[in-house]
Length: 434
Image (cartoon, rainbow, N blue to C red):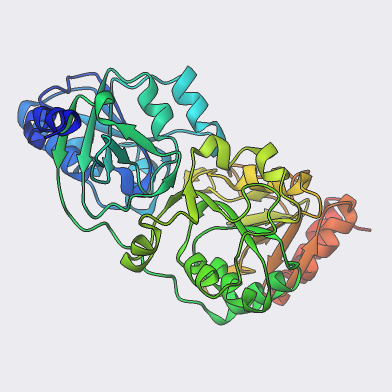
């Protein structure tokens, strides 16, 4: 047995033994999504209930399961702070028994290094290699920054976590305790592609040149865009999230990364969530690298790519082009995420373009998503000066270089026909159009 294996064995403990070292009032932090150590978090929730611990907080960017700490009976003792509000955490945040952290995604590591200090860092990792290194796998994101000032570091080792390449490693010598928990990773099935998605996807694909570098989000429209790119060649990927559609693009030879002027021949991402097929594809794949999010989402790094294409979704747009992608009125729905990072980066890229997508309506065509003004209390995600293209199933409106009047007219033209007359009337009242 080598030195590292001996150290591993000495640090091995049960989840219950580890969480005994977490005290009332402490701040706990986990890297995003599949990096959340579900065995340790469940054990901590049970201990908080049993021993009536008070004031523990659990910071996480995007939970993918219905954790115990999201219930009202546990949240008074173990409070969740969402750095991006998922569907599982949404009710808790909206009703006030969970909190959320406003931030640009690229700034999250800086906040951990300079503003928020964790007492405990814990994360799910891949098994240790013979040199003593674990991989943060598909959840590199802000892990190292969270860990930097943590007083205690606990790892949950899971054989199902892919070992990925890039800058997402932690050494056994940096760790206080280890818990083994081999459970299959949560899988996120691909969103079905609707007829509207296909229309929007085709609009965008027509405007993407060969040899472009792309960033895609998750959902039906990004999946439709990936599908519509099948006639392109030599595309590259630099994206905060690695998605299922990217596997298809790489395996089909559409994405080669060989024309990228930054990290050629490499797909770059910060985290991933998808199916077992994706996780198997990513395991020990040197063609895909995961890096800290303050590199992946750095506006200057994004802008260094020629022909950078950013594609993201929104909830509503006003007639000046302000975009709300994270709240419904004042109710937090998701988060800023990396949308602004990539919109701004693509805006500076030579030949770059950013696309913000939305259906024209919601609730069976009863609500327009293009509005005279954003709903009262809405959180502005992208400022009007940053927005480039807005795309609905009714067309494409490019706002860059357009006056207020031209913007309003272009946006009305891609709104649902049932609302164009009303929008025109409101635009005239606002003196946006004559």
